[in-house]
Image (cartoon, rainbow, N blue to C red; front, top):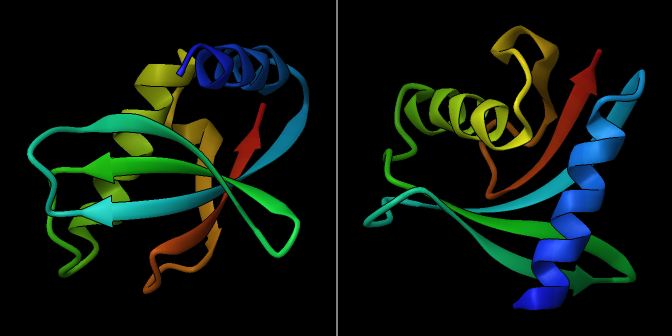
Length: 96
């Protein structure tokens, strides 16, 4: 888990740069919002997160934006889910 924290902290520092992208694997309907590590799928690293909201009417996507903005210490307006809005696999753009 320590390696996960180090990698995520690296993502935080990159989020302060112009534009970054983060691949997410999301588990919705969780007990709490959390970052659960990384998973590699077909050679691509995904940040695994758990979100309390259910995936209905965009509730989970909205909570993802709120949670990630808080974790990255940036504005919600700087985040956008650009792919995977109805999938557990998402592409999160950081525009700063």
